[in-house]
Amino acid sequence: MTKAIFYHAGCAVCVSAEKDILNLIPENQVEVVHLGTDKTKLKNAENAGVKSVPALVLSNGNVLHINFGASIEDLK
Amino acid sequence: MTKAIFYHAGCAVCVSAEKDILNLIPENQVEVVHLGTDKTKLKNAENAGVKSVPALVLSNGNVLHINFGASIEDLK
Image 1 (cartoon, one colour):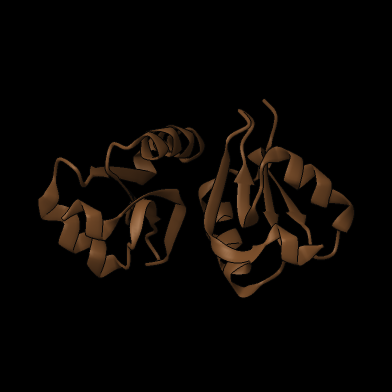
Image 2: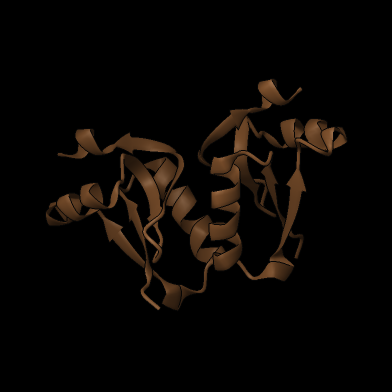
């Protein structure tokens, strides 16, 4: 199975959601990507349909936007 | 550990998110509440800080609003 990808940007909302999500999902099933420090991944996130962070992109392609930390546009 | 509670209301966004969440989280760690059919739980959800569904209320009290299906106000 492809891993889910958790996109975040280091904001308070993101960090809190990250902790919660990683508590719930087995660690080997999720990859964490920090879009604030790794801007090369922004395009991947956008292509996957991520509009804001934190967001979880699932292996089936669905995007779960979790709460609202920052817009993808603001990270560019 | 107290279970997380997944609140939803049967909308398309909710059903899709529910499937995804239940794929990710071990079944014995999450309780699913349908606020459309069980309106007595609306007060619990509101007290927990749920503003819209689907939402996941964690055992630590944090609320993860996942995408947006319907406002709690609209379910009353």
